[in-house]
Image (tube, rainbow, N blue to C red; front, top):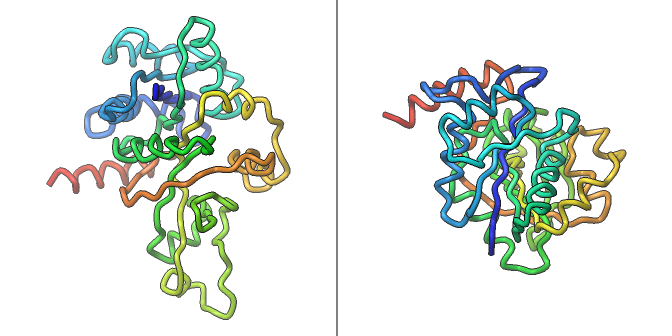
Length: 255
């Protein structure tokens, strides 16, 4: 199985402009993501996909030739940016079986998580896979910044929401995590290569517009999403406050 990992890295984040170039423990966020992805032995090639010449120049300073690709600044999602990369590589004669989309703001992504996603494709029926982790606190459950997911018994996503789901009737919400299992979405995706162009052609859906979650577009269009469970702690960075929290976490794990 030939696997390509793509790391979308956009400069103009509304909440944190220039985020991929921000320093975390003396190393840029995008460099940390790249080197952690490179540690997964099942991944053959890695491409950073960006719309910024500054990010492009920076990646070229620490990665091997061909690792970074300039892409359109008109993409509405990281998935669309991945689609452009795959299309261009295909035109150059490069083909892959599985495409990983590893967000450029996940500096603690673990190689074992990426391997878990890749392993999902041993099942020929799997077209899309993503990660979930268990929610352990009421605060984590209630935060709209944490996307919740409910799944079938055989590991397919039924729905993603910023609201706590499932709703537990006749139970104090503060006790929901004690009364049942709740799962948070970890926003790393893997696609069988032939399905990615179709996903990129889908128009935004009503559920996606309501929740601001692109994976709902795929579900609404009838594409099943397989989920793999991880117990690894990920700290995504969306804001400068998240970066401060990541710095604190980095110091803790280095002790």
